[in-house]
Length: 282
Ligand code: NAP
Image (cartoon, rainbow, N blue to C red):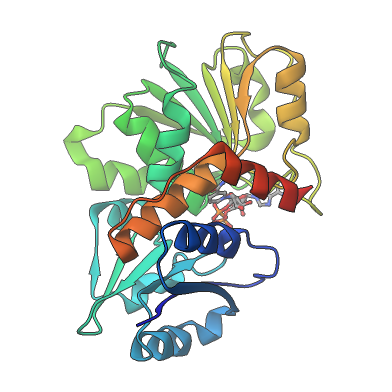
């Protein structure tokens, strides 16, 4: 029987997920199809119900559905609980819906080599949404001593912090400090890692308005944006000789893990696939 999978979101027109998953299905000779379904929030419940009934293996979720979907889960893993967001739903044979968060895996897998043997004292995370929570999860796991969470709305960052303190209780060894994004300047020079988790810099969005000239040369910059491939933040880091990446590896690794959850096979993240996606973006 044909294996059916989809990504739900709104808007969904420019998603790269069908390109990746259909490439892997073909590569692994699996009779299947991955499609993109435009799903505004108000249609989420009905769409999940319908796809589940029609034998879909599961779905990916993107903006604005990752938090909303929590209402419809029969089961969720620890990471969904901590981040409050699910980007993968798995439909069981009995119709049960399980939520997973593979953004955490994707971010960790793409960060780990970049910061190998580097100091893990202070990380600046910009943003306070679902992606920021996935990033925080990883930085805590990786034992960063201090995370400075800078968000446009400081109150929202404080909420994220409170939630992490509750979830980790005495196991939280990382000190989280919340700031308003406009006060980031003072902290830039002490950071070992700077991560942008906001949509700023994305195609059709203005650039992130921060000055990184005081960043240490041995620090690392991670921009979750992959369209364009080089945001102003990535370009400036490159110019200063700072280790940097865009969000394309993270995107591929979250997809790799999603694929595994639905089909019990781990497809390969290769340079060939990366080139295909880069071509699609350019
Ligand atoms: P989200 O939950 O909507 O959160 C967005 C965050 O960005 C919020 O904290 C928001 O601040 C902030 N923000 C929005 N507009 C801003 C502006 N004009 N100036 C400053 N801050 C602003 O979204 P998300 O799910 O976290 O996703 C965020 C980005 O990460 C998206 O662009 C998404 O494509 C990207 N992402 C990439 C990957 C990957 O695999 N590479 C995975 C996940 C997400 P307020 O709290 O003040 O509203």
